[in-house]
Structure formats: C-alpha cells, structure tokens
Image (cartoon, rainbow, N blue to C red; front, side, top):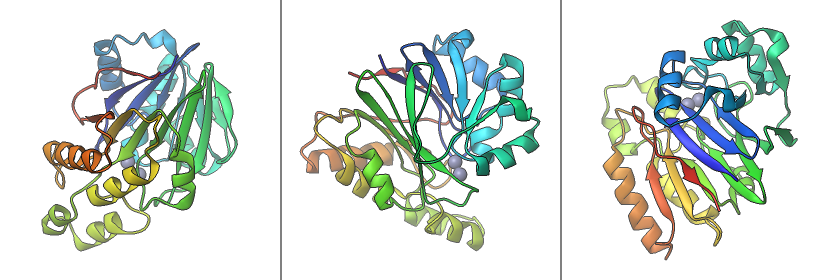
Length: 259
Ligand SMILES: [Zn+2]
Ligand SMILES: [Zn+2]
C-alpha cells in the first residue's frame, strides 16, 4: 500500500504524509506543531502512525514545525549532512538525526526512500522517490529548473508531486523587491507554471495516473490558473486519464491512494 496526504503546500509552509505498509512518514514539517497536529487529525492520521520525518532542505517553509514536532513525538529526522547542519540550529537533538546521502536509497516505515539532488538555493536540497509494493511516488518542489537528474528520477512514477510556483507575469508585476524576483526566477529558485507544464510533458508515463501541483505562491499564482493550465496540458498530451489535484496552503487534500 502507498498513499499521500498533502497537509498543506505553498510558499508559506509544506508538509506531506506518505502512507506505507508499516506506518507513515512526514515529508517536511513546514507548518507549526499546532497546525501539523490539527491537520493530521482532520485527515484521520494517527500521530502514532508516524515513523519519522524526512526533510528535503532547511528553508523555513519546510522545517518551521520540525523541532517542536520531533521533540514532542520523539521521532527520528532523516536528512542529509548539509541540511542537518542547518537543522541542528533549530533545537533538534543531534541524536535524533539520521543522515542520508543523495543518490543512496534508505528504508523506513516499510517505505523505500530515494533522495536525489535538485537545483535550489539551499545547503543540499533534495527531491524524493518513495516506493512500496512496486508503487512509486515522486516529489519535486523547490526547483530552479528540471535538471536531467530530476527528469531521470521523476520518470515512471504512479503519482507525481510537481512544483507549480508562480506565473512569471504575476511575479514580474508583483511588489516584491527586484532581488527576490531575480532569486525566484533564477536557476536555483522556483519552477514557474509554464516550466511545470513542460516538465509534466517530459515525465508523465502510462503508469502515471495522479498528479499534485504543489508549492504555489500565494501572491504570484492562482489555484484556478494552475488547474486550467494543467487541464489544458493534459488534454494536449492526450492524458485525460490522469487525475490532477492542486495542493492548497490552508487546506488538507483528501488522501490519494496509489495502485
Ligand atoms: Zn526552498
Ligand atoms: Zn519551499
């Protein structure tokens, strides 16, 4: 069995739960402890089911609730060395850190987790392919662009979580400082809606049946725009059999089961 619950996703906080045969993993803890608990309860997820937290990178929208959560629930934190050095500053006991290396698969909670490097302005950011029972979920948000390595790992997944961060024109017209716009649009920033649509065309495979568009910017994107663009792109790709879901910042998505 393999499933995914998006507790929340967007530039103000990200947390996903991956359900496996022996429990669940929290993938990033970018919401407050209170919100994480409230949303897990709303989704019917028992806190005792959580086996570990797996962290993609150290930006606040991915680790805000990490320290309080793991200290309260006594959970191990899986991250790589670069992320771990930053994470330790957030009152996480070094003893609870379990280090992985990008490119090396590890097992936790009956799930096989394969981290891979992504182009983004953090210490050592990663995306993940998580698998169980021959089923695969690919997760890649916080991407400046879709590198060859990203394309390689995301190909052939049953469910994909792809970043659809901003509409380039909305970002250009926004009141954000030029330096921030430059960062977001850069090779180590975030994936635009247009780039996400291109990525979709590159990584969808016949087995890919579910898609989550995630990490939308609150000010420089609209959920309706993402949904429209995705529907248009899936139709153009002749893939109307793919179910697409737009992740929300403030709401939990119903759990998606794979297979
Ligand atoms: Zn980030
Ligand atoms: Zn982020």
